[in-house]
Amino acid sequence: MKIRNKLIGTTAFLSIWFTGTVNAQIGKPFIHDPSTIMECEGKYYTFGTRGGGLISEDGWTWNEGGVRPGGGAAPDVVKIGDRYLIAYGSTGGGLGGSHDGQINTMWNKTLDPNSPNFKYSEPIVVASSSNMEDNDAIDPGLLLDPTDGRLWCSYGTYFGFIRLVELDPKTGARVKGNKAIDIAIDCEATDLIYRDGWYYLLGTHGTCCDGANSTYNIVVGRSKKVTGPYLDNMGRDMLKGGGKMVIAAGGRVNGPGHFGLVDLGDGVQKMSCHYEADLDQNGRSVLGIRPLLWKNGWPVAGDNFKEGTYEIESERRGYALELAVDFVRMPGRMRPWEHDPNEPVKAVPSQQLSDVMDTWPKGNTNIRIGDYMFRPHQKWTITAAPNAGGYLGAPYYKIIIAGTERALAATQEGELISVPKFTGASEQLWRIDQLIDGTYRIMPKVVPNSNEKLALVSSGDSTPTLAKFDMNSDNSKWNFRAH
Image (cartoon, rainbow, N blue to C red; front, side):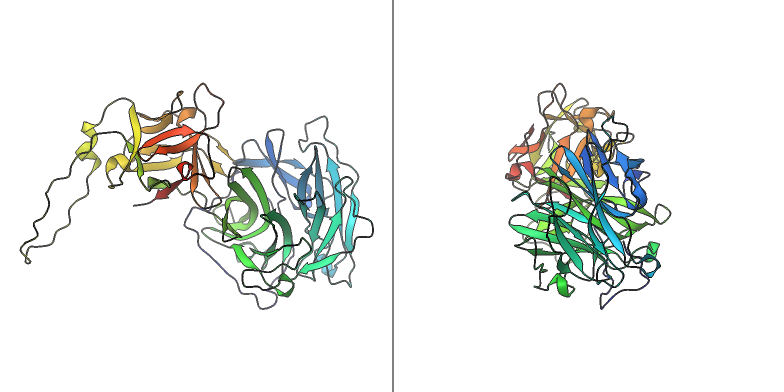
């Protein structure tokens, strides 16, 4: 976090508009400089500046309740073994014109303030800066390297360099004799992640703390070594101001900053951030959670799912999910090759629900996959299910045939049917996750009388079913096409 009233250097404000709805979380998700989201004992936690934090039972509805002593700014959290290490900046940030700062770490066995095991250790200073130094010791980001178990902490703001130090993963203290390394400039609130042989440095660029006028955005560079150099997609070094865009303003929120990664496995990754201002929530700073996609080896923010009416298209072949009902022909016939060139041109109306609905069965109806013909039995309206809660970053959805109450549901046999009316039953609630390649996984909240986590799968060109999700198979992936 750095309070600035103007852009630094030659950076211009970049704004991109997303096709999906850009939702903050619901409840009271008000926070600034959130840490990486952590799951602990069935709940989700994130901590922010000044010592507070948010708690969520499901990852969708967030409220106050997280506890982190020490005050200060811009914490981060990592789980090491069965403990949680928290890092935060206790001073600094250029407040009052001073660059004096400290990065502190402390441990806790749990993040639940109501647990008998909840107790923070005494903080340890792992990095510092003085007034004349070209660095501010603030805004830490933690990486536990999955390749060798080493622990790293990046820190710093626009007032000087972003620096990297190594910490001891057993104590949280700085490795003895370790010297700070300069790895970037012109950013703050950095975070490090590792993927497929590359280390990625994500930094928050632009101005903060100015509400609807904040220009925060998140950029990235990558390196084969954790110590850098970190180059962007054009080969520009982040030590010289480089960085590829990951997320900027869009919709009704602006100023995304403070990246955090949550890897849910099976090709589902989420990124957390805060938006400097949510214009639909009094312009307050709020927690945001977005899908994280990977394109040509680079991370980019995905889109939160947008409610609407869609073709649900199988990645397997491009066929569409549909009711298994008789195909009703439209009026007309094949036009002859020879025709009157002076014949008036008129639009042929699309088939309407009223044209076919009476031919459909009244009770439960099977589901199949077929050639998409933009017919009523192939159009699905998807909206957040009322009072159904959600999961990390999204609500549960209901999926109904457009213009009807007929709802998609899972059966205890692990198959799909359409029931005549949506009742809100758990087997009628659906989780929709955008995968790292941009396609989607569709899962029922529950399969009746089963504890298995199954997903919608195209087991054949015309046969949908519920089965274990396989990220490596197009059978498990779906797209949503608005027509």
